[in-house]
Amino acid sequence: MSNSLTPPSDDVFQHFISTSLDTLLAEHQAVNPEEKVMALFHRCVAEVPAYRQFLEARGVKPKDITTFKAFRELPLMGKADYMQAYPLPARCLGGSLKSSDRVAVSSGSTGQPTFWPRSALHEIDVAVRFEQVFYDNFRAHERNTLAVICFALGNWVGGLFTTSCCWHLARKGYPLMVATPGNNKAEIFRVVRELSPHFEQTVLLGYPPFIKDVIDAGADEGIDWASYNPKLVFAGEVFSEEWRSLMGQRIGSVSPCFDSASLYGTADGGVLGNETPFSIAIRRWLANHPEAAHTLFGESRLPTLVQYDPASRFFEMHEGTLVVSGENSVPLVRYHIADKGGVLSFDEMWDFLRNQGVQSLGELGLHKEFQPRNLPFVYVFGRADFTVSYYGANIYPENVTVGLEQPEITLWVTGKFVLEIQESEDGDKYLHIAVELLPGIEPDLEIVPIIAASIRAQLLRLNSEFANYTPAERQLPLITLRTFADPDYFPAGVKHRYTRK
Image (cartoon, rainbow, N blue to C red):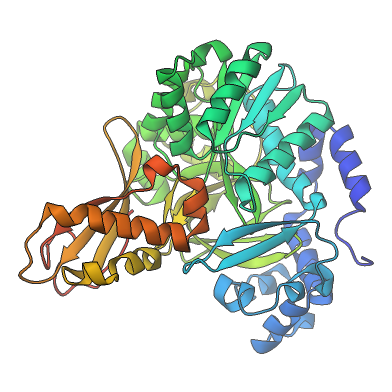
């Protein structure tokens, strides 16, 4: 490509492999992120046919976009009005799939997949996020490490993208072996029993509830997790600090800020940010100071809190939700990812902490000699639309509706329901669906398994993420029957919401 923001791929790989993490991040900090995202905009105007048409249809003249202020007024890309409105090749750089050598798939609200092509070149920015976790949290450059990929393998973004990025780290010289059992617990246990004794630490990478299943089931089968010095990498879901502590207890962790890390990633943008020891320490402090957390985030629940590199993924806020720009085979320019959250600069975070009385790293539980990365923060509550996330799969109300519309069920129910993820006393997550009965119908426990089986069947049929991410033993939802206009779930006269977060 003649007008390229990035050097040829061989140069990018070689630079990543031969350059330390500290130097890579320092180079990125020397970049003006606003100038870089403006350059991405102009490149997309020149090289992405769909983006030119998108702007033209909205009366935007690219030649008028000469300042960052003007950039901030560009229309937002969305999945419906951009990704699903233009042919896939037209959304790619060069108007062609030729520069892409791999593809990921995400499920849409009706099971209709969205395809996200990329090249190995575009994995390098994401590999740096993994390098931060493996270097800063796990000291994997100093320790022989076994990485066990517990994400589903296949076209879904988590498994192969993670595997590829870990391979990049091994190629860079990290003493790292990558095993790929996927989300098959028996294979995971076989890998751990055979290989973990030969390594100084074992890293399990997967969706939080599945990793918990692996740890619990492994312990039941006699695996002594603590003997393998395990570390955990999560993605896809928000979890509590109490849950992190529970996982730490079960693997023998004594350093919660250094023994696990969560990634904020999407199929369309890759990994957008990662937990760091500093962000984890802040989040754990906030978990013990709920009033401070509410002041910072505006809600009583804790979001995922990560740091990000604005030279790699550029975040903005729009009406309490996140907008991201970044280079990819399908470039994102002010793409509305429908996640509720916000951004804070590094200095803003420190100012907030000091105003709350935190004057040192030691007060956050970190060693006074620890040096946090000077990177901004993004916080994420989860999807701002009507989905819920379960084992990393987006569960949509539309999928559940089909399960309730089967002839053997419609004689009992109105079709209204509330979809939510709940947690047992033991910390296990499960899919709970409250179902509204027709007027005059009383709850009958005999219909509960029929409804549960029907919903599961439709989720398996319509939602490939659910079918491939969720373990079979966790796929049957827990159904509770509620009488018509139940005030807790189906109050009369109120606009119904099909999900509860």
